[in-house]
Amino acid sequence: MFLKNKTKDMNMKKLVSTHYSQGIFNFAFLLTRLIFGVLMMHHGYDKLVHFSEIKSTFYNFLGMGSTASLLMVVFAEFFCALFIVLGLFTRLAAVPLIICMSVALFKVHKGDFFGDGQAAALYLGVFVLFLLVGPGRVSVDGLASK
Image (cartoon, rainbow, N blue to C red; front, side, top):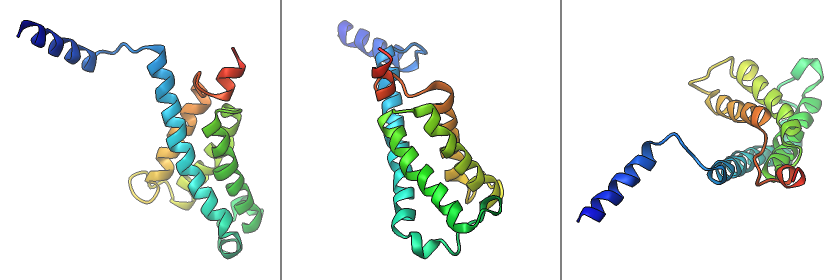
């Protein structure tokens, strides 16, 4: 009985603890990279597959034309997201995604953080996190730096 209560107390202490191991931190970053990278790749893949149907109505970024804007978005959302998933050139790959999500949030969705722009705001926050912190150790970048 005493041992069971002690185990319960230890589990509760772990739950409210602010300490973490380096392994858990790296696993959490791997999981975050995989989830957000794959979800973003899905958005990019959908635009890639339906490119010819979307290009005439796509948002015209900086007057470059809707086709050029769509090309840049496909590059960011599919290929840069693939680099994020792999953890390869992670900080560099985050930059086009940050630009893309900023345009989506502030121009396309007019800064509507809690409405239509909520997904763009969430992605923007995570990609800024990758830019600041990097990919973690469980990545191609992390393995190359050993």
